Amino acid sequence: MLGGHPQEIINTQGVDGADIVVALFGSRLGSPTPDAVSGTVEEIERAVNSGKPVHLFFSRAPLPHDVDTAQLEGLRNFKNEIKERGLLGEFDDIRQLENQVWAAVEHDLVKIDPSVVGVRHEPLGVRFRVESKSERHEKEIDKRGKIKYETKHWFEVTNTGDLAAEAVTFEGQAASGLMRLLVDDQPITLEPGVIWKVPVSYSMGTAGTKLTVHWVEDNEKQSKTFDVQ
Image (cartoon, rainbow, N blue to C red; front, side):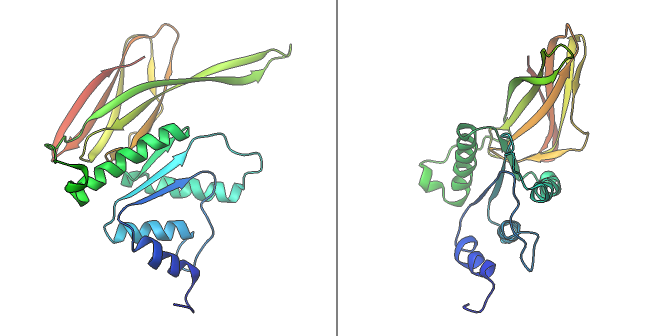
């Protein structure tokens, strides 16, 4: 062990002894190792391959001015690679991160040892919560020096159940006006406790908006429609 690579020591002492693995990402992926693009990625893959519950959370906070662009590009590539595996969540602030981590860990604890959380309840299956979010920010400054603003809208879709939702897709409807979801058509997997951001744009005068979530649960197609703003 004394002659081994430092990452191997971390893997053995940290990952191998863990029951649940939670990884947080800001703007960096980490330093490369002999076996992976970064030590963190190596730890994640080791945990996944050993069957441990793994949860990755990516910050949506503003990037620092001195951000390492090479690290940022590597992080975005890694995020795209694992996107289809349903392992990731996103957060805007510490409070949101705390809620997601607790939801994920509590779910894992029930599977690992039901006695640690008291009497086991009946399985919930897949359950979704949809929240409408918006943020106003500066867009540009016109020729007269006046700041123009724009408002970005999105939905946060959370799997609050205890079963992974597979082949998840989203569909928007509006009674009047235009509602466009800014997502691709590729189905995703939402693990319990994971929040998925669904950007949306509206035309003027749009009303009566709804979001339908389609998914597969126990090999059966399911869907649920939510009223949104």
